[in-house]
Image (tube, rainbow, N blue to C red):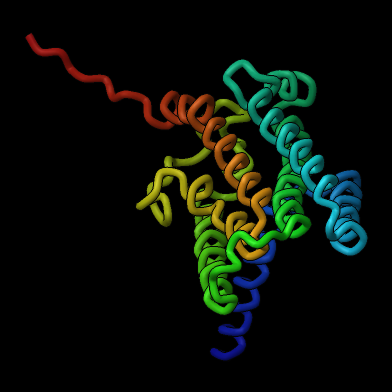
Length: 248
């Protein structure tokens, strides 16, 4: 009985881990719809097409990255700002359905943003790091990838997938307590900072200058979103100043 319970608990943990991974990639199973499923399957087919039939098309990769990046960053900035289009979503569909529509679009953009960064590195290999022994380079990029990937997964698990998709910002209100545990105990923005290391790992492995540039640009823009929009929301909603008594 103990062994069966242990096995069941392990399977549950693996299941929840896979659901988290899939959700972070852009497809949230618990909020799945037929249209969203078709869109993500088509996106997956497109990613496979790029890998198998356009492996070295750097011009296509650059265009794909720039378009994906523009739509991704542009979308979250226009929707999640204090007076952004999130109000239109809510007026049109209500809070719940408006958020689900927002989440579906954002998930689609998440997926293509991630694929485009990986594709631009793999399609434009270069010799930037040929002076480093290949085995040493492999160890370095593996550690880089694991560190960033693990941190991002752990951070997403701690804040929940709803916060990962900025549900609180979309609704304009607090939906959970401010998180100060896990990676957030040591880093203010673990997903925007260390969580971006896998993109650099890919670029370094392929020796791709375009890969490094795209990883840096993506990180620069997501931090720009944080300082211009998200940080103000966090201060306004989660870190309201505590009223102080005036003596005398």
